[in-house]
Amino acid sequence: MANKTGKPNSINMASLPDLIGYNLRCAQVAVFQHFSQTIGEVEISPPQYGALVLIDANPGISQSAIASALRFDRSTLVQIIDRLEDRKLVVREVSATDRRSHALKLTELGHTLLAELNILVNTHEQHMTRDLSVDERHTLMELLARVYKKAED
Image 1: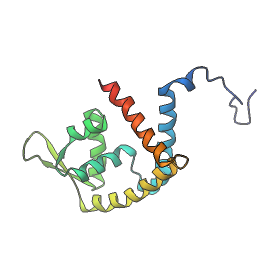
Image 2: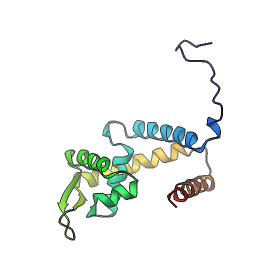
Image 3: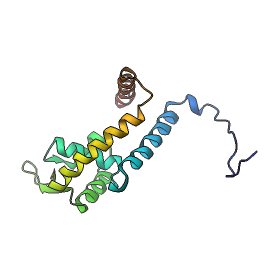
Image 4: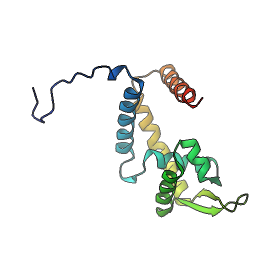
């Protein structure tokens, strides 16, 4: 039986709810959608925000180091940095230690925007974990880290 949208009223999810990948994906979709709603007109994606945070914390960081930290392939990260550079948020400079590499730095506009984004992201994080206690949030972060760190072994 279908509802007005043509979608089934209920669907047998079989074993999907018991799979960590399914639950992680559902959580990721919810987190990314709320992130986009919270950030709004700024139009910064979660990966772009992650890159800005890392560049701010590590001035002169290489694209390879960011790609590794954020678990992106280098070509994906190049696109992210291209977008940030096009928006005048990041500059690429020749690395002082490796001329084949770019050292990334935030521009003044990048620093200003990141300060604003940090406030919005804090609001977003509070919203997404509003039903968790501080201890539960901490436990969730530890458990997720254990899952992905174990996968790297």
